[in-house]
Image 1 (cartoon, helix red, strand yellow):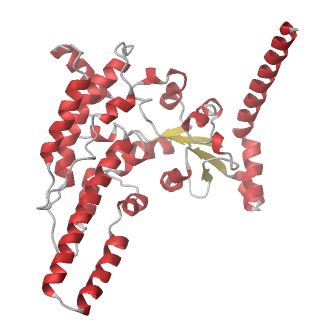
Image 2 (image 1 turned 30 degrees about the horizontal axis):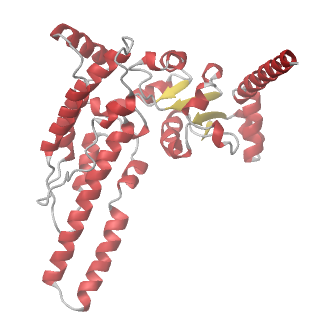
Image 3 (image 1 turned 135 degrees about the vertical axis):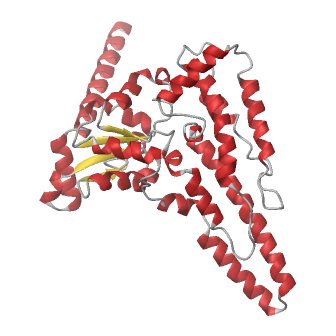
Length: 349
């Protein structure tokens, strides 16, 4: 009796795997995608369009910019065919990698798949070798949006009547070499078997200074806090014994991937770096707002105070959100990561 039950369960599992395999093939079938697009848009001409699968709805605007730059009105970009939350995200898309083709593209965050392919050996080679799988080159979508020069222009625009001295470019110029040092050890260990058991979340946590006062009351950045990150990384990797030759080899490996001390901040967790920039932005806005309110109270009286503060509230809410800057950030011809993504998309044709 037990044997029959085991046999039945085995057959059910085999059938389930076959159904899943057939379903995945279905999702990358050009004819099905053409029919789906035609049905969705109510036009036979739309059957000529392809589809780009992305990880999440929040990625749609980002990927549409790059796809439409080379292939306007030739692809629909979306997270899934139907409202199937369980079928979203990078892990779900990885199962479709093998079937990617000119009609069905897949666009994902690189994460560490390029830098440390041994983390995800089953799928990382597809990102490296399959021209129909587009990736962010930097760690994630956030990484591609956080160019220090353009961030600095955005931060410089944050002003009502009081000038701040937050130099985000200078901060990232000091932060990035620290990130590079961390990546040197982290990538080398993960590409060499990871005998010490390093994990991404612990590595990323070394860069966490969100609980600190980063923007000082004089409206400058406390760059001394970067020492905390350096100390965190030293503690995290303190069991490693690298001589100069080994460090140089590990650095050269990253440099062959065009990762260097100047741009390494875009190759560690994009969420971690975005959260740091967001915290700096948040603290700056809070201090600026308080100073503007104090200035209003000094220079006005009575009803005018409330009117000016109401005007101030509208200004700070509408004009200075970091999310809006990232959402509207265009393709930048001078951005090295944008160039890589554009070249990858162009290679599809």
